[in-house]
Image 1 (cartoon, rainbow, N blue to C red):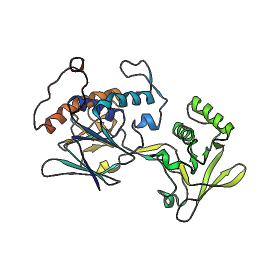
Image 2 (image 1 turned 135 degrees about the vertical axis):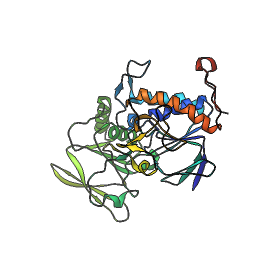
Image 3 (image 1 turned 180 degrees about the vertical axis):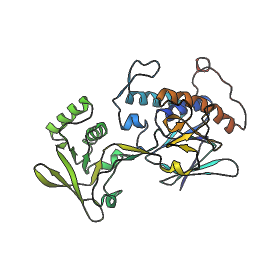
Image 4 (image 1 turned 60 degrees about the horizontal axis):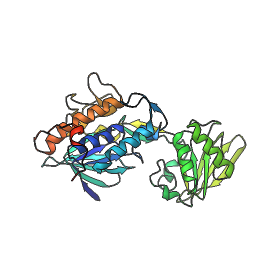
Length: 336
């Protein structure tokens, strides 16, 4: 089992979790972020990267993906660690007050403070209704792309019609031996620019695009070998090493529901003074928390991330209060 240490573990690498790293960094606290998704940014990266956002101070309008990139650049000086494509399964508190955070893939992190910034919960992939689908999970069927190099010189079939399916098809086309994109409709839901690029790749032969089609059967012994595709022209089989259905994500509270936290309607109840939960040392910020007057806005998540770090500092430094200073005076300095 791999082990690590950090001052703070942040569960969720969406915009609120990312900004929390910045506020922690100003107070010389180190963060380790864990997210089930394969990239930072939460919903902004995975569901609507090209959606315009209008209520971020200083930006009359900014695309979701650009906001994520800006947040990542903002926290670079503080060198956060990321564990992506994984999720927290267990949390235990030791006799010395430290927490041990255990992930599904076997990482064990020791920390003093846990901040849950899980948005609407743990986003799980929407899976196609295919017989024996589970048989090929981790042996040919992937729902999240963690390492694009995995698909180099492989035969890949992607199913989906949104931004995620289009973006990954365009990205992987130059890596794969063959790439087929299957969509059950005639029109894509992705950004017009991506659709135009896809058409160019299709015309050049880099991507095989099948519309009004869907994967109807998976075939193989120990691993996936063929997919059967059904369209209005009949059924066809394709040789495949990996089938990647990208049908979006469904938010679920997941293991968080089993950690002894006080929960109301799938949201974690917190004290609005510092967003602490009923378990000392564990806080919740962003869309996943609940308190009187709560608004589920990115802007509010940023505010919560700022205040929570004041209490986190006191825990990490055994009751010592942080010295508040304006960044216009101190600037941004790297962690020691």
